[in-house]
Image 1 (tube, rainbow, N blue to C red):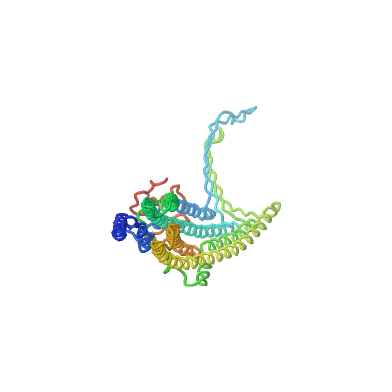
Image 2 (cartoon, one colour):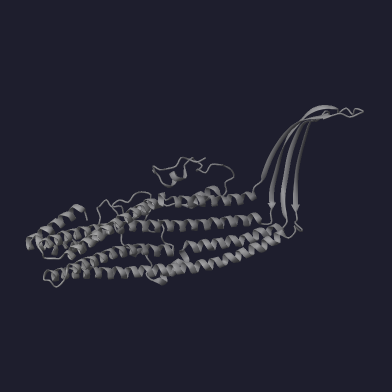
Amino acid sequence: MPENASTHRNADADRTAKAMVGTGRAHVFAGLRSGASVIALALLFGGGPASAESLSQALASAYRYNPQLDAQRAQLRATDEGVAIANSGYRPNITASADTSLDYAETRPSSGSNGTVNNRGYSINLTQPLFTGFRTTYGVKVAEANVRSGREDLRDVERTVLLNAVTAYMDVVRDQAVVRLQENNVNVLSRELKATQDRFAVGEVTRTDVAQAQARRAGSVSALDLAKANLKTSRATYERVVGNPPSNLADPGPPDNLLPRSLEAALAAGEHENAQIISALYLEEAARHNVDQIRGELLPSAQLEASWSERYDPSPNVEQAESGVVAGRVTVPIYEGGQVYARVRQAKQLHVARLQQVELVRTQVREGVIAAWAQYQAAKAQVQSDRTQVNAAQTALLGVREEEKVGQRTLLDVLNAEQEQLNAQVQLVTDQRNLVVTGYAVLAAVGRLEANRIGAASEVYNPEIHYEEVRRKWWGLSITHEDGRNERVDLWPGDRREAPPMK
Protein backbone atom coordinates (compact mmCIF):
# COMPACT_ATOMS: atom_id res chain seq x y z
CA MET A 1 0.00 0.00 0.00
CA PRO A 2 1.39 3.46 -0.83
CA GLU A 3 2.44 5.30 2.29
CA ASN A 4 0.40 8.44 1.51
CA ALA A 5 -2.82 6.40 1.26
CA SER A 6 -2.00 4.72 4.55
CA THR A 7 -1.37 8.13 6.15
CA HIS A 8 -4.75 9.45 4.99
CA ARG A 9 -6.48 6.38 6.36
CA ASN A 10 -4.76 6.82 9.71
CA ALA A 11 -5.72 10.49 9.88
CA ASP A 12 -9.36 9.67 9.11
CA ALA A 13 -9.36 7.04 11.85
CA ASP A 14 -7.96 9.54 14.39
CA ARG A 15 -10.51 12.21 13.47
CA THR A 16 -13.35 9.69 13.79
CA ALA A 17 -12.16 8.58 17.21
CA LYS A 18 -11.90 12.14 18.52
CA ALA A 19 -15.28 13.13 17.13
CA MET A 20 -17.04 10.22 18.81
CA VAL A 21 -15.43 9.98 22.23
CA GLY A 22 -13.19 13.01 22.68
CA THR A 23 -9.50 13.23 23.38
CA GLY A 24 -9.60 11.31 26.66
CA ARG A 25 -10.99 8.16 24.99
CA ALA A 26 -9.15 8.30 21.68
CA HIS A 27 -7.07 5.26 22.68
CA VAL A 28 -10.06 2.98 22.08
CA PHE A 29 -10.02 3.72 18.38
CA ALA A 30 -6.30 4.28 17.99
CA GLY A 31 -6.07 0.70 16.71
CA LEU A 32 -8.31 1.33 13.68
CA ARG A 33 -5.18 1.36 11.56
CA SER A 34 -4.27 -1.99 13.05
CA GLY A 35 -7.70 -3.28 12.10
CA ALA A 36 -7.45 -1.85 8.62
CA SER A 37 -4.09 -3.54 8.20
CA VAL A 38 -5.85 -6.91 8.18
CA ILE A 39 -7.81 -5.85 5.16
CA ALA A 40 -4.70 -4.33 3.59
CA LEU A 41 -2.43 -7.28 4.37
CA ALA A 42 -2.87 -8.74 0.91
CA LEU A 43 -1.90 -5.39 -0.56
CA LEU A 44 1.13 -5.13 1.70
CA PHE A 45 2.34 -8.57 0.73
CA GLY A 46 0.95 -9.30 -2.71
CA GLY A 47 0.02 -5.99 -4.24
CA GLY A 48 2.29 -3.66 -6.09
CA PRO A 49 2.41 -1.03 -8.78
CA ALA A 50 2.21 -1.92 -12.43
CA SER A 51 5.95 -1.41 -12.82
CA ALA A 52 6.80 -4.06 -10.21
CA GLU A 53 9.63 -6.43 -11.04
CA SER A 54 8.07 -9.85 -11.48
CA LEU A 55 9.58 -13.11 -10.33
CA SER A 56 10.00 -14.18 -13.96
CA GLN A 57 12.03 -11.06 -14.65
CA ALA A 58 14.22 -11.72 -11.61
CA LEU A 59 14.78 -15.33 -12.67
CA ALA A 60 15.64 -14.23 -16.20
CA SER A 61 18.19 -11.76 -14.84
CA ALA A 62 19.75 -14.42 -12.60
CA TYR A 63 19.85 -16.85 -15.53
CA ARG A 64 21.71 -14.34 -17.66
CA TYR A 65 24.13 -12.72 -15.27
CA ASN A 66 24.72 -14.98 -12.27
CA PRO A 67 28.49 -15.64 -12.15
CA GLN A 68 28.01 -19.14 -10.73
CA LEU A 69 26.07 -20.13 -13.84
CA ASP A 70 28.60 -18.45 -16.14
CA ALA A 71 31.43 -20.30 -14.41
CA GLN A 72 29.67 -23.65 -14.82
CA ARG A 73 29.03 -22.95 -18.49
CA ALA A 74 32.73 -22.24 -18.98
CA GLN A 75 33.53 -25.44 -17.07
CA LEU A 76 31.28 -27.39 -19.44
CA ARG A 77 32.96 -25.84 -22.47
CA ALA A 78 36.30 -26.95 -21.05
CA THR A 79 34.85 -30.47 -20.66
CA ASP A 80 33.79 -30.35 -24.33
CA GLU A 81 37.45 -30.05 -25.28
CA GLY A 82 38.01 -33.50 -23.79
CA VAL A 83 36.27 -34.97 -26.84
CA ALA A 84 38.61 -33.08 -29.19
CA ILE A 85 41.56 -34.32 -27.14
CA ALA A 86 40.34 -37.91 -27.39
CA ASN A 87 39.67 -37.62 -31.14
CA SER A 88 43.27 -36.50 -31.67
CA GLY A 89 44.23 -40.16 -31.19
CA TYR A 90 42.85 -40.88 -34.66
CA ARG A 91 44.99 -38.22 -36.33
CA PRO A 92 48.60 -38.18 -37.50
CA ASN A 93 51.43 -36.75 -35.47
CA ILE A 94 53.73 -34.63 -37.67
CA THR A 95 57.00 -33.12 -36.52
CA ALA A 96 59.78 -31.25 -38.28
CA SER A 97 63.31 -30.50 -37.18
CA ALA A 98 66.28 -28.60 -38.56
CA ASP A 99 69.87 -28.36 -37.43
CA THR A 100 73.19 -26.90 -38.43
CA SER A 101 76.71 -27.55 -37.19
CA LEU A 102 80.39 -27.08 -38.02
CA ASP A 103 82.14 -30.41 -38.28
CA TYR A 104 85.91 -30.73 -38.30
CA ALA A 105 87.68 -33.93 -39.23
CA GLU A 106 91.34 -34.76 -39.84
CA THR A 107 92.94 -38.18 -40.37
CA ARG A 108 96.56 -39.26 -40.85
CA PRO A 109 97.41 -40.28 -43.39
CA SER A 110 94.87 -38.08 -45.08
CA SER A 111 91.77 -39.80 -46.45
CA GLY A 112 90.66 -36.89 -48.57
CA SER A 113 87.82 -36.00 -46.20
CA ASN A 114 89.79 -33.78 -43.88
CA GLY A 115 88.63 -30.25 -43.18
CA THR A 116 85.73 -28.27 -41.80
CA VAL A 117 82.18 -28.47 -43.23
CA ASN A 118 78.94 -26.71 -42.39
CA ASN A 119 76.69 -29.73 -41.88
CA ARG A 120 73.05 -28.72 -42.00
CA GLY A 121 69.68 -30.19 -42.87
CA TYR A 122 66.10 -30.83 -41.96
CA SER A 123 63.70 -33.72 -41.50
CA ILE A 124 59.94 -34.26 -41.46
CA ASN A 125 58.41 -37.18 -39.60
CA LEU A 126 54.84 -38.47 -39.68
CA THR A 127 53.25 -41.10 -37.47
CA GLN A 128 49.73 -42.26 -38.25
CA PRO A 129 48.07 -44.60 -35.72
CA LEU A 130 46.31 -47.49 -37.42
CA PHE A 131 45.23 -49.57 -34.44
CA THR A 132 45.60 -48.72 -30.75
CA GLY A 133 43.80 -51.60 -29.12
CA PHE A 134 40.54 -49.59 -29.22
CA ARG A 135 42.01 -47.15 -26.69
CA THR A 136 41.14 -44.14 -28.82
CA THR A 137 37.60 -45.41 -29.45
CA TYR A 138 36.87 -45.90 -25.80
CA GLY A 139 38.69 -42.68 -24.91
CA VAL A 140 36.22 -40.79 -27.08
CA LYS A 141 33.33 -42.60 -25.41
CA VAL A 142 34.68 -41.66 -21.98
CA ALA A 143 35.00 -38.02 -23.01
CA GLU A 144 31.48 -37.93 -24.49
CA ALA A 145 30.01 -39.46 -21.33
CA ASN A 146 31.82 -36.83 -19.26
CA VAL A 147 30.36 -34.11 -21.49
CA ARG A 148 26.84 -35.42 -20.96
CA SER A 149 27.47 -35.62 -17.24
CA GLY A 150 28.77 -32.05 -17.34
CA ARG A 151 25.58 -30.89 -19.01
CA GLU A 152 23.57 -32.39 -16.18
CA ASP A 153 25.87 -30.69 -13.68
CA LEU A 154 25.09 -27.41 -15.46
CA ARG A 155 21.37 -28.17 -15.13
CA ASP A 156 21.89 -28.81 -11.43
CA VAL A 157 23.72 -25.51 -10.96
CA GLU A 158 20.96 -23.76 -12.90
CA ARG A 159 18.43 -25.34 -10.53
CA THR A 160 20.40 -24.11 -7.53
CA VAL A 161 20.77 -20.58 -8.88
CA LEU A 162 17.10 -20.26 -9.82
CA LEU A 163 15.96 -21.61 -6.45
CA ASN A 164 18.31 -19.15 -4.74
CA ALA A 165 16.79 -16.38 -6.84
CA VAL A 166 13.25 -17.41 -5.85
CA THR A 167 14.30 -17.52 -2.19
CA ALA A 168 15.99 -14.11 -2.38
CA TYR A 169 12.97 -12.62 -4.17
CA MET A 170 10.49 -13.91 -1.60
CA ASP A 171 12.74 -12.92 1.31
CA VAL A 172 12.62 -9.32 0.11
CA VAL A 173 8.84 -9.49 -0.37
CA ARG A 174 8.41 -10.94 3.12
CA ASP A 175 10.76 -8.51 4.82
CA GLN A 176 9.16 -5.52 3.09
CA ALA A 177 5.76 -6.61 4.39
CA VAL A 178 7.16 -7.21 7.88
CA VAL A 179 8.70 -3.74 7.94
CA ARG A 180 5.38 -2.19 6.97
CA LEU A 181 3.56 -4.18 9.62
CA GLN A 182 6.12 -3.17 12.25
CA GLU A 183 5.89 0.48 11.18
CA ASN A 184 2.14 0.23 11.49
CA ASN A 185 2.51 -1.27 14.95
CA VAL A 186 4.87 1.51 16.07
CA ASN A 187 2.35 4.13 14.90
CA VAL A 188 -0.53 2.39 16.68
CA LEU A 189 1.41 2.01 19.93
CA SER A 190 2.62 5.61 19.72
CA ARG A 191 -0.98 6.81 19.59
CA GLU A 192 -1.86 4.35 22.33
CA LEU A 193 0.88 5.77 24.51
CA LYS A 194 -0.23 9.36 23.83
CA ALA A 195 -3.83 8.53 24.67
CA THR A 196 -2.74 6.74 27.86
CA GLN A 197 -0.64 9.72 28.93
CA ASP A 198 -3.63 12.02 28.32
CA ARG A 199 -5.86 9.78 30.41
CA PHE A 200 -3.23 9.62 33.15
CA ALA A 201 -3.16 13.42 33.20
CA VAL A 202 -6.90 13.47 34.02
CA GLY A 203 -6.66 10.57 36.47
CA GLU A 204 -8.40 7.87 34.43
CA VAL A 205 -5.44 5.41 34.48
CA THR A 206 -2.44 4.74 36.68
CA ARG A 207 1.25 5.23 36.09
CA THR A 208 1.49 1.46 35.62
CA ASP A 209 -0.69 1.73 32.52
CA VAL A 210 1.60 4.43 31.15
CA ALA A 211 4.68 2.30 31.83
CA GLN A 212 3.10 -0.68 30.11
CA ALA A 213 2.33 1.41 27.02
CA GLN A 214 5.85 2.85 27.04
CA ALA A 215 7.43 -0.60 27.33
CA ARG A 216 5.29 -2.04 24.53
CA ARG A 217 6.11 0.87 22.21
CA ALA A 218 9.85 0.57 22.93
CA GLY A 219 9.68 -3.12 22.08
CA SER A 220 7.90 -2.32 18.81
CA VAL A 221 10.60 0.20 17.88
CA SER A 222 13.26 -2.45 18.54
CA ALA A 223 11.35 -4.97 16.40
CA LEU A 224 11.10 -2.39 13.61
CA ASP A 225 14.86 -1.79 13.69
CA LEU A 226 15.48 -5.53 13.41
CA ALA A 227 12.98 -5.82 10.55
CA LYS A 228 14.73 -3.02 8.65
CA ALA A 229 18.10 -4.71 9.18
CA ASN A 230 16.70 -8.00 7.87
CA LEU A 231 15.32 -6.20 4.83
CA LYS A 232 18.70 -4.68 4.04
CA THR A 233 20.29 -8.11 4.29
CA SER A 234 17.66 -9.62 2.01
CA ARG A 235 18.12 -6.85 -0.55
CA ALA A 236 21.88 -7.42 -0.57
CA THR A 237 21.40 -11.15 -1.08
CA TYR A 238 18.92 -10.45 -3.88
CA GLU A 239 21.40 -8.20 -5.68
CA ARG A 240 24.13 -10.83 -5.37
CA VAL A 241 21.98 -13.63 -6.77
CA VAL A 242 19.87 -11.76 -9.35
CA GLY A 243 22.39 -9.13 -10.43
CA ASN A 244 20.42 -5.94 -9.77
CA PRO A 245 18.78 -4.27 -6.75
CA PRO A 246 15.14 -5.23 -6.06
CA SER A 247 12.48 -2.84 -7.28
CA ASN A 248 8.81 -3.00 -6.26
CA LEU A 249 8.66 -6.77 -5.84
CA ALA A 250 5.28 -8.46 -5.67
CA ASP A 251 4.18 -11.87 -4.42
CA PRO A 252 3.82 -14.16 -7.47
CA GLY A 253 1.99 -16.94 -5.63
CA PRO A 254 2.98 -20.62 -5.65
CA PRO A 255 3.67 -22.33 -9.01
CA ASP A 256 0.68 -24.68 -8.72
CA ASN A 257 0.30 -25.11 -12.49
CA LEU A 258 3.89 -26.37 -12.80
CA LEU A 259 3.86 -28.84 -9.93
CA PRO A 260 3.14 -32.59 -10.11
CA ARG A 261 -0.36 -33.51 -9.01
CA SER A 262 0.70 -36.01 -6.36
CA LEU A 263 3.69 -37.24 -4.41
CA GLU A 264 3.82 -40.37 -6.55
CA ALA A 265 3.98 -38.26 -9.71
CA ALA A 266 6.71 -36.13 -8.16
CA LEU A 267 8.77 -39.21 -7.25
CA ALA A 268 8.40 -40.62 -10.76
CA ALA A 269 9.43 -37.32 -12.30
CA GLY A 270 12.43 -37.04 -10.00
CA GLU A 271 13.59 -40.54 -10.94
CA HIS A 272 13.71 -39.65 -14.64
CA GLU A 273 14.38 -35.90 -14.72
CA ASN A 274 16.58 -35.00 -11.77
CA ALA A 275 19.97 -33.82 -13.07
CA GLN A 276 21.93 -35.45 -10.25
CA ILE A 277 20.66 -38.93 -11.13
CA ILE A 278 21.31 -38.47 -14.84
CA SER A 279 24.79 -37.10 -14.17
CA ALA A 280 25.59 -40.10 -11.97
CA LEU A 281 24.42 -42.46 -14.75
CA TYR A 282 26.73 -40.81 -17.28
CA LEU A 283 29.65 -40.97 -14.84
CA GLU A 284 28.97 -44.70 -14.46
CA GLU A 285 29.05 -45.02 -18.24
CA ALA A 286 32.37 -43.16 -18.39
CA ALA A 287 33.84 -45.45 -15.72
CA ARG A 288 32.69 -48.53 -17.68
CA HIS A 289 34.33 -47.31 -20.89
CA ASN A 290 37.47 -46.42 -18.94
CA VAL A 291 37.92 -50.10 -18.06
CA ASP A 292 37.94 -51.02 -21.77
CA GLN A 293 40.23 -48.12 -22.58
CA ILE A 294 42.90 -49.31 -20.11
CA ARG A 295 42.47 -52.94 -21.15
CA GLY A 296 43.35 -51.86 -24.69
CA GLU A 297 46.93 -51.30 -23.54
CA LEU A 298 47.30 -55.10 -23.43
CA LEU A 299 46.41 -55.40 -27.11
CA PRO A 300 48.77 -54.99 -30.08
CA SER A 301 49.07 -51.61 -31.74
CA ALA A 302 49.98 -50.68 -35.29
CA GLN A 303 51.08 -47.43 -36.87
CA LEU A 304 52.39 -46.06 -40.14
CA GLU A 305 55.64 -44.12 -40.02
CA ALA A 306 57.04 -41.89 -42.75
CA SER A 307 60.01 -39.57 -42.76
CA TRP A 308 61.94 -37.41 -45.18
CA SER A 309 65.31 -35.81 -44.52
CA GLU A 310 67.74 -33.73 -46.52
CA ARG A 311 71.33 -32.90 -45.56
CA TYR A 312 73.66 -30.32 -47.02
CA ASP A 313 77.41 -30.75 -46.86
CA PRO A 314 77.25 -33.76 -44.57
CA SER A 315 80.95 -34.36 -45.31
CA PRO A 316 83.73 -32.76 -47.36
CA ASN A 317 83.14 -35.25 -50.15
CA VAL A 318 79.33 -35.08 -50.17
CA GLU A 319 77.47 -31.95 -51.15
CA GLN A 320 73.89 -33.08 -50.55
CA ALA A 321 72.06 -36.19 -49.31
CA GLU A 322 68.36 -37.02 -49.33
CA SER A 323 66.54 -39.93 -47.75
CA GLY A 324 62.95 -41.04 -47.24
CA VAL A 325 61.40 -43.89 -45.29
CA VAL A 326 57.89 -45.33 -45.17
CA ALA A 327 57.41 -48.13 -42.66
CA GLY A 328 54.71 -50.01 -40.83
CA ARG A 329 55.25 -50.88 -37.21
CA VAL A 330 53.39 -53.38 -35.05
CA THR A 331 53.98 -53.46 -31.30
CA VAL A 332 52.86 -56.42 -29.21
CA PRO A 333 52.99 -55.95 -25.43
CA ILE A 334 54.17 -59.05 -23.62
CA TYR A 335 54.73 -58.06 -20.01
CA GLU A 336 55.12 -54.64 -18.47
CA GLY A 337 55.51 -55.54 -14.83
CA GLY A 338 51.79 -55.91 -14.06
CA GLN A 339 51.01 -52.21 -14.05
CA VAL A 340 48.29 -52.39 -16.71
CA TYR A 341 46.60 -55.32 -15.02
CA ALA A 342 46.52 -53.40 -11.75
CA ARG A 343 45.07 -50.35 -13.48
CA VAL A 344 42.34 -52.48 -15.07
CA ARG A 345 41.40 -53.91 -11.68
CA GLN A 346 41.48 -50.40 -10.24
CA ALA A 347 39.18 -49.12 -12.98
CA LYS A 348 36.74 -51.98 -12.35
CA GLN A 349 36.56 -51.08 -8.67
CA LEU A 350 35.92 -47.46 -9.59
CA HIS A 351 33.13 -48.61 -11.89
CA VAL A 352 31.56 -50.54 -9.00
CA ALA A 353 31.82 -47.38 -6.91
CA ARG A 354 30.02 -45.41 -9.63
CA LEU A 355 27.24 -48.00 -9.69
CA GLN A 356 26.75 -47.59 -5.97
CA GLN A 357 26.90 -43.83 -6.36
CA VAL A 358 23.94 -44.01 -8.74
CA GLU A 359 21.91 -45.85 -6.12
CA LEU A 360 22.99 -43.40 -3.44
CA VAL A 361 21.95 -40.41 -5.55
CA ARG A 362 18.60 -42.06 -6.30
CA THR A 363 17.84 -42.44 -2.61
CA GLN A 364 18.98 -38.87 -1.91
CA VAL A 365 16.77 -37.49 -4.68
CA ARG A 366 13.83 -39.53 -3.43
CA GLU A 367 14.41 -38.17 0.07
CA GLY A 368 14.65 -34.61 -1.28
CA VAL A 369 11.41 -34.94 -3.26
CA ILE A 370 9.50 -36.33 -0.27
CA ALA A 371 10.86 -33.62 2.03
CA ALA A 372 10.11 -30.82 -0.45
CA TRP A 373 6.59 -32.13 -1.08
CA ALA A 374 5.91 -32.41 2.66
CA GLN A 375 7.16 -28.87 3.27
CA TYR A 376 4.98 -27.56 0.46
CA GLN A 377 1.85 -29.28 1.76
CA ALA A 378 2.63 -28.05 5.27
CA ALA A 379 3.07 -24.50 4.00
CA LYS A 380 -0.32 -24.63 2.26
CA ALA A 381 -1.99 -25.78 5.46
CA GLN A 382 -0.15 -23.18 7.52
CA VAL A 383 -1.27 -20.34 5.25
CA GLN A 384 -4.91 -21.42 5.65
CA SER A 385 -4.53 -21.61 9.44
CA ASP A 386 -2.72 -18.26 9.53
CA ARG A 387 -5.57 -16.54 7.70
CA THR A 388 -8.03 -17.93 10.22
CA GLN A 389 -5.74 -16.80 13.02
CA VAL A 390 -5.46 -13.27 11.60
CA ASN A 391 -9.23 -12.95 11.30
CA ALA A 392 -9.75 -14.34 14.79
CA ALA A 393 -7.10 -12.04 16.27
CA GLN A 394 -8.76 -9.05 14.63
CA THR A 395 -12.15 -10.02 16.05
CA ALA A 396 -10.59 -10.58 19.47
CA LEU A 397 -8.86 -7.20 19.37
CA LEU A 398 -12.07 -5.38 18.55
CA GLY A 399 -13.85 -7.20 21.38
CA VAL A 400 -11.13 -6.46 23.91
CA ARG A 401 -11.23 -2.79 22.98
CA GLU A 402 -14.98 -2.65 23.47
CA GLU A 403 -14.70 -4.46 26.79
CA GLU A 404 -11.93 -2.08 27.88
CA LYS A 405 -14.27 0.83 27.20
CA VAL A 406 -16.70 -0.42 29.84
CA GLY A 407 -14.01 -1.42 32.32
CA GLN A 408 -14.11 -5.18 31.79
CA ARG A 409 -10.57 -5.26 30.34
CA THR A 410 -7.35 -3.44 31.19
CA LEU A 411 -4.96 -1.58 28.95
CA LEU A 412 -2.57 -4.53 29.19
CA ASP A 413 -5.24 -6.78 27.70
CA VAL A 414 -5.55 -4.39 24.76
CA LEU A 415 -1.79 -4.31 24.27
CA ASN A 416 -1.61 -8.10 24.37
CA ALA A 417 -4.40 -8.42 21.84
CA GLU A 418 -2.61 -5.99 19.53
CA GLN A 419 0.60 -8.01 19.87
CA GLU A 420 -1.22 -11.25 19.09
CA GLN A 421 -2.71 -9.68 15.99
CA LEU A 422 0.70 -8.44 14.85
CA ASN A 423 2.26 -11.85 15.46
CA ALA A 424 -0.48 -13.50 13.41
CA GLN A 425 0.03 -11.06 10.54
CA VAL A 426 3.81 -11.57 10.54
CA GLN A 427 3.35 -15.33 10.65
CA LEU A 428 0.97 -15.16 7.68
CA VAL A 429 3.47 -13.11 5.70
CA THR A 430 6.24 -15.58 6.57
CA ASP A 431 4.21 -18.65 5.64
CA GLN A 432 3.09 -17.09 2.36
CA ARG A 433 6.77 -16.67 1.57
CA ASN A 434 7.40 -20.29 2.56
CA LEU A 435 4.57 -21.49 0.33
CA VAL A 436 6.14 -19.96 -2.77
CA VAL A 437 9.69 -21.07 -1.93
CA THR A 438 8.69 -24.64 -1.11
CA GLY A 439 6.65 -24.82 -4.31
CA TYR A 440 9.72 -24.02 -6.36
CA ALA A 441 11.76 -26.34 -4.13
CA VAL A 442 9.51 -29.18 -5.30
CA LEU A 443 10.23 -28.22 -8.91
CA ALA A 444 13.94 -28.19 -8.10
CA ALA A 445 13.79 -31.59 -6.40
CA VAL A 446 12.11 -33.29 -9.35
CA GLY A 447 14.43 -31.61 -11.87
CA ARG A 448 12.01 -29.21 -13.53
CA LEU A 449 13.32 -25.88 -12.25
CA GLU A 450 14.81 -24.77 -15.56
CA ALA A 451 14.60 -21.39 -17.23
CA ASN A 452 12.95 -22.71 -20.38
CA ARG A 453 10.43 -24.90 -18.53
CA ILE A 454 9.20 -22.20 -16.16
CA GLY A 455 9.21 -19.47 -18.82
CA ALA A 456 11.92 -17.41 -17.18
CA ALA A 457 14.01 -16.79 -20.31
CA SER A 458 13.20 -16.43 -23.98
CA GLU A 459 16.76 -17.40 -24.95
CA VAL A 460 18.47 -20.28 -23.22
CA TYR A 461 22.04 -21.50 -23.28
CA ASN A 462 22.52 -24.33 -25.78
CA PRO A 463 25.62 -26.38 -24.87
CA GLU A 464 25.33 -28.37 -28.10
CA ILE A 465 26.57 -25.39 -30.14
CA HIS A 466 30.03 -25.25 -28.59
CA TYR A 467 30.28 -29.04 -28.45
CA GLU A 468 29.71 -29.37 -32.20
CA GLU A 469 32.20 -26.59 -32.89
CA VAL A 470 35.09 -28.20 -31.07
CA ARG A 471 34.57 -31.96 -31.03
CA ARG A 472 36.28 -32.50 -34.42
CA LYS A 473 38.32 -29.32 -34.50
CA TRP A 474 41.86 -29.97 -35.85
CA TRP A 475 43.57 -26.74 -34.79
CA GLY A 476 43.04 -23.23 -33.48
CA LEU A 477 43.79 -21.43 -30.21
CA SER A 478 40.88 -18.98 -30.07
CA ILE A 479 37.91 -19.75 -27.84
CA THR A 480 35.61 -17.43 -29.77
CA HIS A 481 33.48 -18.53 -32.67
CA GLU A 482 35.10 -19.03 -36.05
CA ASP A 483 33.43 -15.91 -37.43
CA GLY A 484 34.79 -13.81 -34.55
CA ARG A 485 31.62 -13.69 -32.47
CA ASN A 486 32.12 -13.75 -28.74
CA GLU A 487 30.21 -16.41 -26.79
CA ARG A 488 28.22 -13.88 -24.76
CA VAL A 489 27.24 -11.93 -27.86
CA ASP A 490 25.98 -15.13 -29.45
CA LEU A 491 23.89 -15.98 -26.41
CA TRP A 492 22.49 -12.61 -25.50
CA PRO A 493 21.99 -10.35 -28.55
CA GLY A 494 22.11 -6.69 -27.61
CA ASP A 495 23.62 -7.32 -24.21
CA ARG A 496 25.44 -4.17 -23.14
CA ARG A 497 27.55 -6.10 -20.66
CA GLU A 498 29.17 -8.35 -23.26
CA ALA A 499 32.81 -9.26 -22.73
CA PRO A 500 35.45 -8.46 -25.35
CA PRO A 501 36.40 -11.36 -27.62
CA MET A 502 38.93 -13.67 -25.97
CA LYS A 503 41.89 -14.88 -27.98
